[in-house]
Image (cartoon, rainbow, N blue to C red; front, side):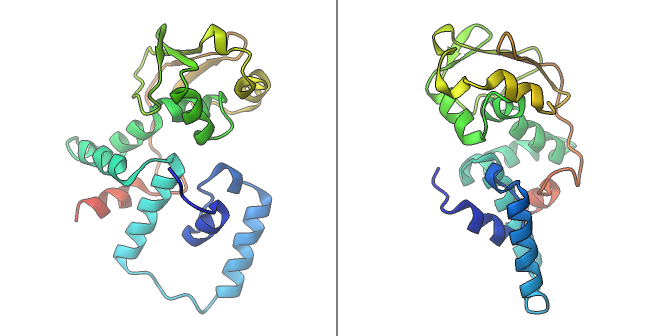
Length: 201
């Protein structure tokens, strides 16, 4: 999915939604923008605010408009739609790889999955959007272990704070889903409750 200049898009949305924008350099750039536009920014309408939150979540996970809409429609069928939506987004194979340190970015994780470098419960997979569930194990194919994509996997995984719903074994190059992701309002750069309101108009 081509999205254009990431710094420019992140500044427009006002949040570090891409991996490369999660840095002091971006924070300083955003601070300068806020300072220069103080008193000149036109307040957003409710629709504008909801649209911004929707775009933040979509670009953060690197998914299409159609994919996000489908996730939201499924989440509306349960009692806690924001939690359901978060769980669907977080348990995507590409996102789990990124969270576990198997890839530097979600884009790289999608590449690894679509190129068939991974095995899910012992079987090769090539679909980045596969939904993982509790008990699932993801590992590298033996023939992919020497790929440049995973050259620093062990060091990267050890330096990360892995979510509680994932268990990672850097030496074995394996991750396991041991729980469900829990959505905490305010814990992300986007508000999924507002995203749901956008689609529920």
